[in-house]
Length: 295
Image (cartoon, rainbow, N blue to C red; front, side):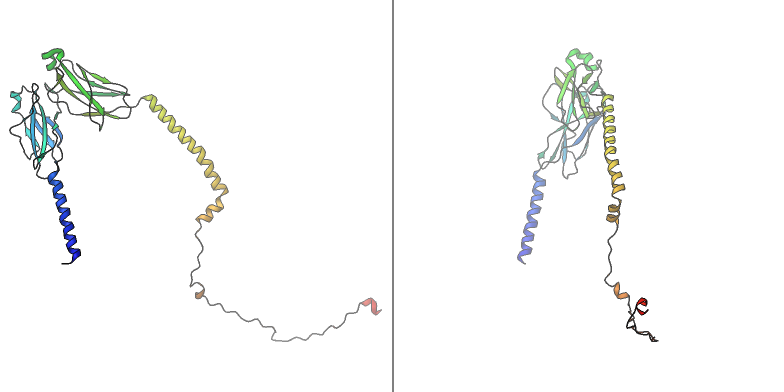
C-alpha cells in the first residue's frame, strides 16, 4: 500500500468519526407546529433518525411537569391526551420534547387552534398604525372567578419572540405600530396572574398603511417618474440628433479582409506599347518666322 492511499484512508476515517460524533453528541431538532385539536396533540417531527418524543402536562395549581403515560419516548408525531380531561378539569398546559441517545431538546409548549373553556376565542382587526385583539368579557372562567380571571395578550413583530404582553379583562388594542409590517399575537388565560390552560395559536396580520401615506407614496412615485423623464428625454434626443454619426460608427462592424482574399484573384497587367502598329511620318519644324518679318 502506497503512502498516498494510507493518508486517504486515515482522512476518510477521521471524517466519518467526526460526522458520527456530531450526530451522536448533538441533540435533535425540537418539534414544530405543536397544537391541540379535540384533545389530539400533533406536531411536526424532525427528519433526523432515532428521535423519540415525550409529552408532558402541567395543571394550574402546580409548577411540576408530568409525563403523559401513553406518550413517553414515542416515535409518532401525535398523542391522544383525552385521559387528562377528567383528571385535570379540562385545563392543562402541554409541551413536547425530543430525545435521542439520552440527549434532549428544550420542550416546546403546545397551543390550541380552537377556543373554549381553557383557550380564549381570538379575532384580530388591523387598522393603520394599530391592532385590536377582540376578546369576550363573558367567558366561563370570568363567570366563575370574576376579576381574578384575565387575558394575557402577547404581541410582537413576525419572526421575533412574543415577549411583550398586556393583561386585561377584555379586548386589547396596540397602537403606534409600524405600517406595512407583520405583527403576531397569541392569548392565554391567567388566574391570579398565573397562566391557565392552553394559549391560542399565534396569528399574524399586516398593519395597513394610512391613506395619507399612500397618497404621499403615489406623489413621490409620480415626481420621481417626471424627473426621470425630464432628464432622459433631452439626453436621448441630443444623442439621436447630434451623435447619429458616432452611433452608426459604433454599431458598424469593423472591416476585415480575409488573408486568402487576394489569392483568389489573378490580376494580369498588359504592357502598354510605346509605338503603334502603323508608323506615321511628320515633318520636323526647325524654325518659325513671324509673318511681319518676312514682308
